[in-house]
Image (cartoon, rainbow, N blue to C red; front, top):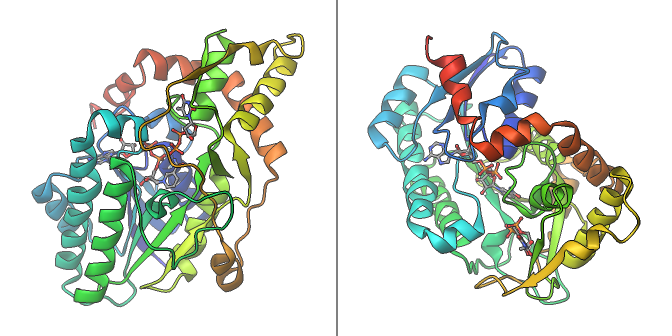
Length: 351
Ligand code: NAD
Ligand code: TYD
């Protein structure tokens, strides 16, 4: 069946993997990647698919309500997969307002445009909102987040995502908008901006720079390989039930310090350094404000109802990820120097 999709935030880390999956797997779909290209949006992530006939890129800001309305009227999407967001907790602590604007106002603009475009005739339409497990707050040393866990966000990032989740549910309950939400745990893999833990530390180890560990490194995250998240998004988009929420997680909890030591060990091996060399770069720093202790996802609903499970063991995923960053130094150089921002001008300025 033919479909037109708008994927927001498709130039970012997870979005680029989702765009690639949909463009390649569904040649009959028209896939429009709508992205503002903030510091986190990098079209080089999609170099390999940008010439495919079912892919289009549209530069735009979801905070601009008129632009979004106009775009929806022109494109007439059947589905929205909404990943555009400000996504880094540390940035949300230093500048919360960008998070409120993009994550909350931007989401409402998309919801309004979807209603307008679909004229409240919602058959075969879907608004798919991608969210995070961070909306549920922090766990103690036991237990898991389920879809019924009450929201309890602590950072401006997670609070803004919680706000957007509530609004998506409100549009479903109030206007009947067919909407589905997924809340996923921490992703890792190729193409992640090196401000997040894993790519930052790989790059620092390579360059013999300190590894700044918050607090005592005892916080726990549940890590999922990004392509497994993209596969879950594909499944929920096609088989998920409107009105439902699905938690997605790797069943793969790591205390930060253990994960960092693991990465150090693999890096020593890859860089032919003596065992223990990279660990010497670990530097404990003042804890992050409002730092959630532990996230852990119960993904039995998506497993039982839709048949999803992570495909990659963590050992394989983390080695694959480290090798990707080591083998893609040009990508990393462009990101670190800001040169990737010129790619759009070069590729798209005369279109
Ligand atoms: P990212 O920061 O790598 O990418 C975000 C993308 O959104 C970028 O391409 C950016 O240019 C675009 N964008 C930002 N503001 C925009 C705006 N105003 N208008 C249009 N585009 C804009 O983020 P990510 O890690 O790929 O996360 C994608 C989504 O998944 C987010 O909604 C995030 O909350 C969610 N999520 C992320 C994780 C994770 O571990 N990274 C886990 C669970 C959920
Ligand atoms: P991060 O990748 O920022 O993801 P999130 O905060 O959304 O979970 O951080 C993952 C964990 O690593 C988190 O507990 C904070 C910690 N961390 C550090 O200790 N040092 C760092 O420099 C970064 C970026 C994160």
